Length: 247
Image (cartoon, rainbow, N blue to C red; front, side, top):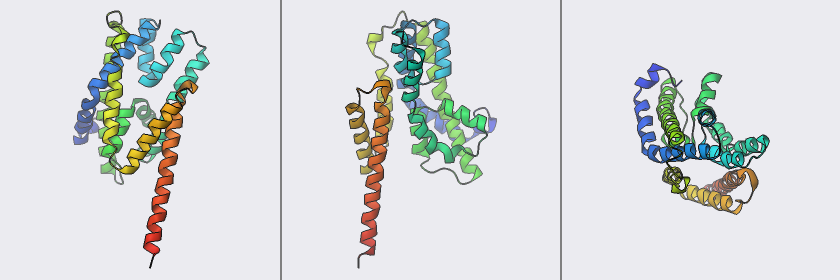
């Protein structure tokens, strides 16, 4: 889908690019420090470039790098990356109505290129999936622009970090800029009391379960936020039903 000229010419492609540009500085700093961290962990330049290209997931890369440096077994590294990225199962389930009309290879490519920021920005612009070929085309064009720029930005600055690994100390903590960019986008979505509660529950659960291995606190946070949201929605619907049925 990302290589179709019709998507490049669509107005939504430019919108997707502009939205991604807003978060690009934070993403670039995150990618830069990930490149530095990969080299400093003992990976060769080739291994670092290969990992940056294949994995394309900052959180799991940063979670796996200390394990690689410590000489942890391969299954532990893979299990950690798998657990950290399990949140994409939730993203995939949500994105299914948007993408199921595409061939399998295009859905796989979309899954590879989709990031947290792209997912958040896409679902904010398109709360509902398209019901016509024109609407689906617009959504694909937005994804192509947004994910394409994010991928190019991440890969470019990862390579720059690998090249400049000897000049940029990890103590600068530039990777935290990526977290700030992510927080900025996520907080912009907190537009209702239910979303504020969901974000608060997720944050509290993530901190409370921080000691769990393999970054499983992320899954605990997702499960707690989803469970709380479902309960609050059910309570809200029950309240409305009682009000409507009252004489």
